[in-house]
Length: 250
Ligand code: 13P
Image (cartoon, rainbow, N blue to C red):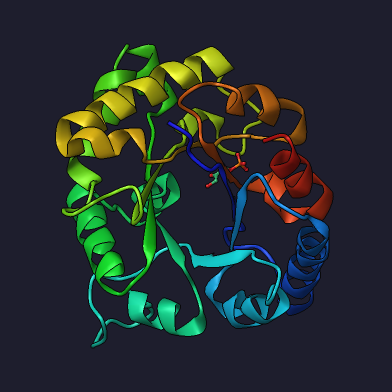
C-alpha cells in the first residue's frame, strides 16, 4: 500500500512575526522549485503566526495546521481556539493530543477524541498523537500504552483521508534520543494492527508518522521502515535547511 509521506513541522511555542514569515517563505521558495514532491509538507505554527504563514506559503503547496483546537465551534471558552477558526484562517490540519498537551493541560484520550471529532466536522484533518513515557517503556508497557491511546483517542468516523496518527515516544521528544528504526517500526506495526481492529482495511491506507528528535541524519532510515509514513518534527522544523533535509530523505 503506497502511502504518501507527510512531513509535518510542529513549531510549538516558538517564533515571533519575523521568524515565522522567514521560515515559511524559505520553505515555500524551495517547495516551488520542486517539480513533483515525493511528500506532502505541513507546518503548524503557534496561533498568532498562522495568518501570515498561510500568506507566505501561498502557491507553494505547503499546508498549514494548528497545534490544538477546542471541542466547540464557538462560545465562552476563554483562551481557546475552535477548529472552525483554524479552517477559516486556511488551516487544513490540526495536531491533537500531543504529549505536551497531555502533560501541561491534563488532556485525556476521551478529550482528544472529542476534539478530533469536532475538528473533522469543521473540515480539518487531524493528527492524533500517542506515545509512551520512559517509565512506561522501562516497565514493558510500550505496546499496551500506545494501543490504549489509539483506541481511546481515535475519532469516530476516522478514515485515511481525515486522520493521521503520530507516534511520539515521550522520552525522544526534544531530548536528542531517537527511537531506533527497529524500535519505532515495532510500535508503528502494532499501531497499524490496532487500527485494523478498529477501522478494518482503512488502516492500511492511514499514515502513521514518527516524532521525537527526527533530524536530516536519521530521517532516512526511520522513514525507510515499512510502517513509518513521515515525521512530526519539533526542533528541526525551526530551521529551513533541517526541515527541508528531512523532507528530501523521503
Ligand atoms: P523534537 O523533534 O524537538 O524532538 O519534537 C518532536 C515533537 O514533539 C513534534 O511534535
